[in-house]
Image 1: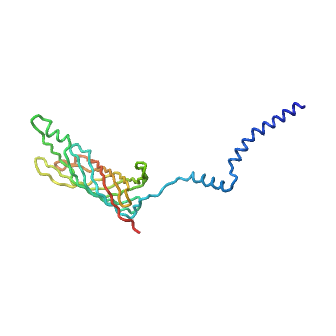
Image 2 (image 1 turned 90 degrees about the horizontal axis):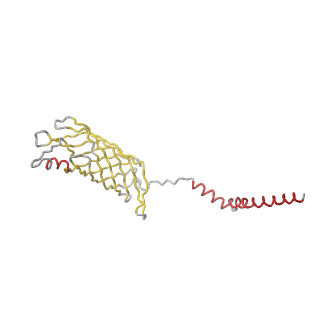
Image 3 (image 1 turned 60 degrees about the vertical axis):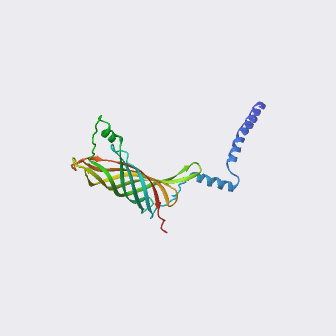
Length: 246
C-alpha cells in the first residue's frame, strides 16, 4: 500500500510539472492590462485591412494638351516619323474624349534602297509604291482604370496611370498613278486601338507614351482595294494639364 501511495504521489508531481509551463504560456498570451488588450485588437484588425491609396493626380473635368513624336516601324518600304498633337477632356476620373492629329515624315528603308540601287549590277529598279501615309486625324475614348507608384533610384516615388484607347480616324495618303509622275491625294477612313501610360512629373505636367494600331482599306494605283493596312505607331510626348475646377 505504501508503494502504491508513493506511485500516486509521483504521478501527481509529474502532472503538475507538465501543466505548469503550458499554464504560464497561456497566461502570457492574455494581456493582463486592459489597454494592452485594446492595442492587440486594434492591430489585429489593421492587419486584415488592405491599404489602397487614392490617386494623387486627379484628372476629372480637366483638359490635357500633349505634343508628341514617334515612329511607325512596321512598313516594309518606309519608316514614318509622326509629329502631332493630342487633346483630352476628362469628363470623369477614368474616361476622356481624345482628339489627335499628326503629320508623317517618311524615310526610305533599306529594302527600298536595295531594290533601287543594288539589286542589278549597273542598273536600278524604280520602286513606286501605290500609296503612302501623309497625315492622320481622329477622335475616340480613352479609359484609364489603372494607377500606381514606382520607385525611382530608391529615393523618390513616381506616380503613373495606364489606360486603353478606341477610336475612329481619317488618313490622308498620296496615291501614285501608274505611268504618271505626280501623285494624287486621297482620304481614307479607318479605326485605331491602343494604350497609354503617363508618368507624372507634377500636377500639371506628365510624360506620356502611346501605342496606336491603325486599320484602313489600302488602295492601288487604280483606286481599287488592295487589302487591309495596319500601321503600328509608338509615340513619346509631353502633356500639360489645366487647373482643376474649384
